[in-house]
Amino acid sequence: MSTPVETRGREPFVHPALFYRDADEYLAGTVPFIRSGLAAGEPVAVSVPEANLALLRAGLGADADQVLLMDMSVAGRNPGRIIPGVLRAFADTHPGRHVRIIGEPIWPNRSDHEYPACVQHEALINLAFTGRDVTILCPYDTQNLPAVVLADAEATHPLLIDSDGERASTGYDPEAIIAGYNRPLPEPAGAAELTVDTTNLAQARSLVRTHTQRAGLSEDRAADVELVVTELVTNSIDHGGGAGRLRIWT
Image (tube, rainbow, N blue to C red; front, side, top):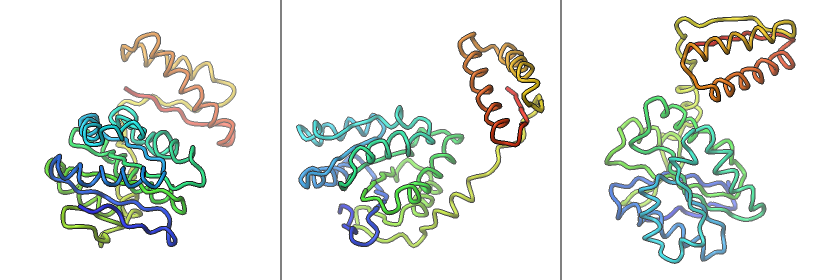
């Protein structure tokens, strides 16, 4: 299994998907990628689910000590945190150097609720890193992920790698993925609404307390929700023309 071609000198950002069928193919596609980066003196980070992290630790041996290893099921549990909290957080600490990252944001146990955010994350990487001297390799388990996930991977990655080698993705279209999955949430049933301005912030907080108590939240969690809503409402007032609309539901 090959590792990504070097494309620096054209677009410096490289974003391949690695399609693997088993542990052997996983290691064949990731370990040489890591070791090539280490041999070139490049910073390398890996953020994959714990089971694959254990595979890589064993496969790398002593070289694992030179790599930043993160459990993606923790660091990327919220897909919206992966770009700022994992990928950019690592790349930004190494300005002026080529950086290699393995990121596996989609695995078989991801829920149906999480997946739309995960696939949009993969599409948005292409916008977030354009012009950056970074390579982000994204593994996909072809034996256990649905066909639609693999098709979406072809749309979000311009380069595809599998046991047959590497090829350009003919289905690459990240903008279509963003448009297709970035849909409004379904309308909630029984939502309470309140138009909020500087005159009734206390009423907004009272509404939040009522709903958190009704939902059975602990005092600490209820305080968290009240704080979040207060911040959101204040931002709406400050930056949204002096008023905002609060909707709250369980």
